[in-house]
Length: 218
Image (cartoon, rainbow, N blue to C red; front, top):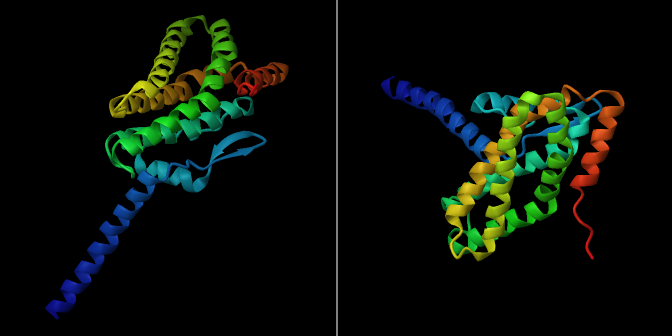
């Protein structure tokens, strides 16, 4: 009788704690926030929304966004995932570890910057920041801070090829990139969306697409 009770107790403990651990591992390893696009804008898939609640974190796509910002949202989605990989790589938590893994991750970040972030920054600096500054004069400090972060990321990525051991720089770039993206989602994008109506929204979307497009190869 006592043995049966011990077995039942162990099974109950296992189902509770191991399931929790599995859920944590899945959240920690699942970088796809499940953003889907509809005519109304960008939404978080129900399963991803549940994972966000469980983890206590809000993903960049955890609220509906205006369709005009769709290209930037996609960059943010990928940028958050890459920022996490950069930090984990710097800490030796992703294989291959050591200099081989660090160099591979540095190349991934440099490629993402060239193909996505560079144009992303151009679009923000060329259309979103002036748009917000004109509609919200009190947002000057926010825009100045975001511009400084753009320059910090630009300089850091430019220094990656000359780093013999890029672990520290990779961690710092991953950290600043994630914080930058989350700040734009929380503070900048709501100010933009407040003024996106009618023809103005179409104009902003067209300008974002034009400025964010990667340069054509010569």
